[in-house]
Length: 425
Ligand code: GDP
Picture (tube, rainbow, N blue to C red):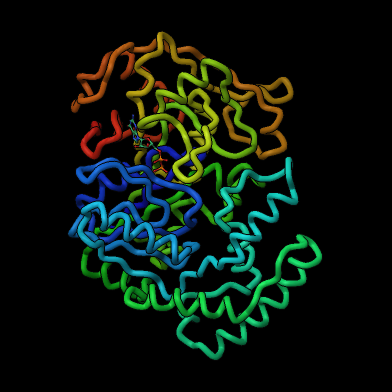
């Protein structure tokens, strides 16, 4: 059976923790999109880890971690992370890398930096990991698949050809140093050595695994609202963040994805620019940011302070719907235990009308939050294992959110650790 673990919001919902937890009973964990631009923070018996490209299943002996074809694979970053994990005592993870995954080239990272410089104040808030230039090239059909590393002659011809076009832009648009095809080729040969032992026909491997009854997890990065089609375009990421894309980015039949576990955070946070209707500011935001997540809401990749907001029922209802949610995992609820009252965004006012349907970006920019205030529970809920033992106001908060978003909250995460989870049927 295949389960997808994906985000309902702007990312940073705690997907890493939920994946790590579900991986206890899984055989294979697959990353199917995105790259090293966002991170998961995972706390387990080995310590605290910020993973950017390794799947969150790497901490178990019994799992195989797979990089699917949909991923933007930064080979040096991947192996640096792999070595760090092993250096900290984790048994060497079993990994497989799709022969169809494409490679983040050194110049993708440069182009990302140069473009952000050029756009200055109008930038998209890129993490400068090369993700947008990477996916642009993939769809412009000048990307490099892992498989291409193994045909040196054809590769060299393509490298020369691609450098020619890149160099025109480097010279005339960015006024930066030009690419040298020989240096690039040498670097790619290094990449080849690194990936060679792990390259695999991943879709075939997964096809056989499905037939053998294996338990497969698809691990998403970021969340619904960062999807290039269904998110807050253009303040989105460059690959689809939706469970449906898992079928493509891993190469599995769509009908095999039986469960879509959408991770939804009990308050809001976002990174980068873009409309954020329930955003809060000042001391109120600072306090939530300080207390949020596990050690504060700061980017796992960049260390940037995240933008903070109250729970947004409109965005989350949409975020869950567009994922095709079967189960909601409601996370970081423990963080809200300090509040006397908890505001929740229950509608958007746009041009004088109130809606609970998430609009397109042009209208979203005009939306003002309609807030409802719920009573807080003023206690620490960490360590609680049974739903009935949660304070009444805490249960009311969960049940209110569930009714507003219209999807069943079957898991409640009340701490960063693997076992901080309350199941609810
Ligand atoms: P991801 O990208 O969706 O995996 O999310 P991140 O890892 O960026 O952010 C989630 C943060 O919240 C991490 O620091 C987690 O350790 C932490 N976290 C996850 N679930 C919980 C929870 O239920 N309670 C608390 N306090 N922290 C949590």
